Amino acid sequence: MDSESSEDRRIRELWQSQQTEGFRMSIEQIRVGADKFQRKIAWRNAREYAAALIVVIFFGFHFVRTDDVLLRTGFGLAIAGCLYVVWKLHSKGSARPLPKDAGLASSVEFQRNELARQRDLLKSIWRWYLGPMIPGLAVLIAAMSRVNPGHLQRPGLFTAIYTIAAAALFLGIAKLNSRAALRLQKRIDELENLEVDDRGRPK
Amino acid sequence: MPDVAPGQQTRQDNLFEEAFAIYGAALERLARAYEAEREARRDLLQEIHIALWRSFAGFDNRCSLRTWVYRVAHNTAASHVNRQLRMKKQPVVGLEELTKMPERAEGEEANAGRRHSLDRIFGMIQKLGPLDRQVMLAYLEGIDAASTAEITGLSARNVATKIHRIKNVLARQFREGGRDGQ
Image 1 (cartoon, rainbow over the protein chains, first blue to last red):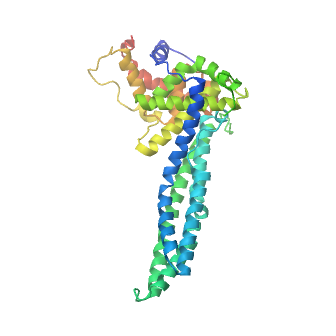
Image 2: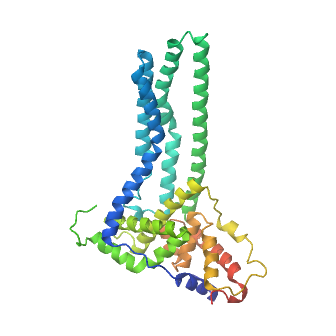
Image 3: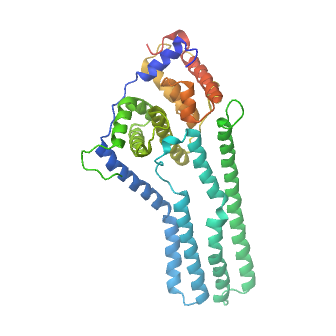
């Protein structure tokens, strides 16, 4: 380190001579620990899917109970949409252990990749989250207005209100995600600037 | 996980043993810089050990053992911190903000002991975001600027600027009479 003063040395000596606990794991403990750690991550992901499971159970219950074909189709499509979202979330966005080649990636690169993964997930929300839910929702709204006409004095109005409310909700979610993706992009750009070398070229 | 008989050592195991023998204490200090609470620190240290052992399956000497060890350790710790930040929403500050923090309070013991001095350093480190934290830790471990740039992926100029700020921050905190830590 350049121009090291006695103060620099003193602070570093203080840091490096601090008492440590001598923590260590044997290779056997590490092997067992690696398995346990994988299970812990799997469990953490599973908890995140609990909400989707509740929705699937709810729709599944009504899917079985109803005799109306259109309603049943709506519930079926909603369940399929939900399962697709969970699958995408699992394959693209779930927590995962550090990759085996983590030592090849510098900290900036590692963080940039993680942020880019999250950004891409947020940016493509129509494809993997909102889009797959639309068919089920649309059929359910149409079926509800048809199945229970006695309860609804103006089924057309019911359909219009629910369609507008659902569209507003979806557009709101998309907008929030788009903003979050922009914030992540800003952080990615900042990281890329940190990597640019002294001659202004990317490292 | 490789299929090995109990007690049989693989190249991966040997690399881990070698890395632990050289950097075991430094990894403990690193974990302490990321996690103040003892139990959480042990969890993080376990996570680092496991990540390191797993990573050695792919170690092919493309970089030095030291660079590899610190990259894996810091990347593991950064993931750990990001998870904590999402849960606790703790604010982080940059080195710039740290230089604006008040110096030692009036009347505070100038020659407070080593423990107190170390606590101050830990207090500063734990306020920093992952990259600033990594540069500060590398500086404290005596890793030169070029190696720090290699580990972190920051440009040499950025590392030099950050080290300059770190020195200023530490000097402000420890300046009085050079009696701290003695």
